[in-house]
Amino acid sequence: MKWRVILAIARKDIVDAVKNLYILGGIVMPIVISLLLRLVFPSADESNVFTIAVHDPDGSRMVAELRALPQVELLEVASGDLLAKEVEENAVGGLAVPSGFDAAVEAGEQPELTVYLNQRRVGYERLAFRRVVEQQVWALTGREFPARIVWTDVAASSETRERDEINFNHYLLTMFLVMALSTMGAFVVPLLLVEEKEKQTLQVLLVSPATPAEVTAGKALAGLFYSLLTAGVLIGMNRGWAGDWPVTILVLLLGSLFLIAVGLLVGGLLRTTMQVNTWASIVMLALMSPSWFTIVSLPAPVDIALHLTPTYYLTQALGLALAGEASLARVGGHLAILLGSVIVAFAAVVWMLRREER
Amino acid sequence: MNAIETENLTRVFNGLRAVDGITFAVEEGQIFGFLGPNGAGKTTTIRILTGQLRPTAGQARVIGCDVVNQRERLKPQIGVVFERQNLYERLSGRENLAFSARLYGVDGRRVDEALAHVELQERAGDLVQHYSNGMKQRLLIARALLHRPQVLFLDEPTKGLDPSVARGIRRLIAGLAGQGMTVFLTTHYMEEADHLCQRVAFLDQGRIVALDAPEQLKVAHGQRCLKATLNDGTHLSLSLDDPSDGRRLGELAATGRILTLHSAEATLEEVFIKLTGRRLLE
Image (tube, rainbow over all chains, first blue to last red; front, side, top):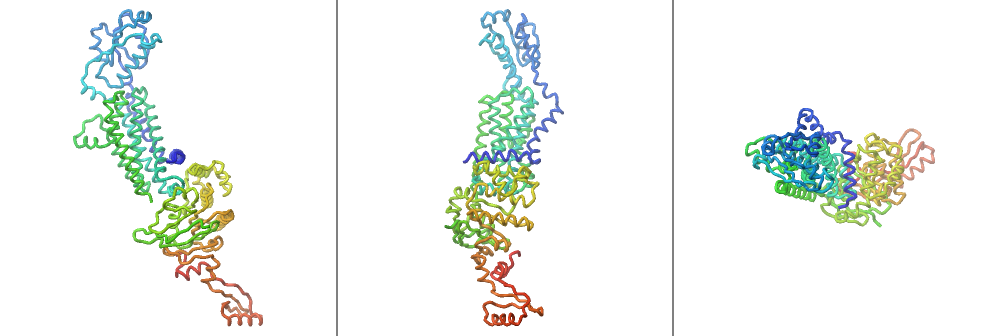
């Protein structure tokens, strides 16, 4: 593999793609739809404000600073005994600030701060709450461990959590991300390949030092660039995002690679733009469909069919990563299936290239 | 030394022998014309020689490289101008060449040299979709020459161009051979081949039916004769090989009855018709 050749092809495609209104439409469509839906559902962002119950008899500096944060709504609780109940019913978490907390912190005594965490709340809320608490505690003195935080879980079975995990904001974002990756993979990448065949510029590439594998890798790289760029824009548009960056990036990368490989297969089989319009749309819809049904119960056969689609696991892993719930135990299986799908899909691309070569 | 050699080269598509056991050689620095009507197998031969298509049987070597087993070594040494104007239309002329330069690992400064060579510097920044056919053809040639190949394959380089543009392209091709480049030219314009090529091969239904220098073909397959118009308006054809026609010519000249007298050697077109019974543009 010659990286000079691969990068030259990718660079040409990245520039050329945005000059093709048709391909440009495919790239920006998920962003435009996302913007339109945000206009239709403006309330989707409101869930980013979370409620914290506090029992703070002395009126500590930390609670005063929490009160000033725009994304925090404080619920004052008169008694420490009522705090857990209040958290369970009305808040994502609670703080039991002991008397003399500020003075103890100043004296470097590391006072105990009991923090309640409502396990019934969605992952991203819990994650955001934890981050806010940790940031505020650390900000108290600028020293390490100004207070000892004791985390206490409140309520909720795992069944309840699974059901509650779905947040409309995340549902939309997951759907748009899967839509964007599917569009890049099943529509844009095949177009990049088919247009070369249609205009007979593929012949030019194949008499140049580029091998078929390098041409394919160049197209894949251009597709990956636009997939990750669009995903980045979509996440950027989602104000107050509080998911797991590393897992989200890993899931997006694996999902993109799988869908790009599918696109290369589609592009390898088809010969005209018209064929791409017809067949790639069907493939794209099939790939996107698992992201539409995460909040509804489906008949068993449909559910089984969705489980057979690798994008189902992309949707699940992405949903968990965006919600800040992407522990290895929860997303490990999804990632493994995605990785397996990427390997199988690229093996199919290599097989197709060898078969078609002359 | 030969730049191109083929031996019994054959390509079969679904039982149809598009190229049928052709054997020929092209010397280095020569312009070699591959002539034949549409469907004769010209483009298939180019596709085999440039490593795009595997032959069903036979062998071919270009610059000493086997076109099947040494493609990667062959590719940087050849340039190809395809029959279709396959440029990236949404990119500018300069961007098209810059892309090719990156593919071949050629210095970017070579782009401007190539543009200057085909006199496209002034329009280099324009999108190719706004170029005329002649400009596109010149850009195709610049692209094929960018990496200074040893052998240039030209597939119908003047097809569909108006006569003045075609003349310019022919001048360009003639200039390349003057610099020592081997040119493999397919065309069905006989005059073009006659004007440019040191040797030509006639291809018909996948087979070479004649191969020689244009002059030799015309001599071997044409008639050596003179066309005379007499003062009374009579037209005569007088063979140079017939002693009685020679005597008659002498008598006519002596009596002052000849108004005009022209040599009438066969054209390549006539040779082709004689050999195949068909016209080139059929």
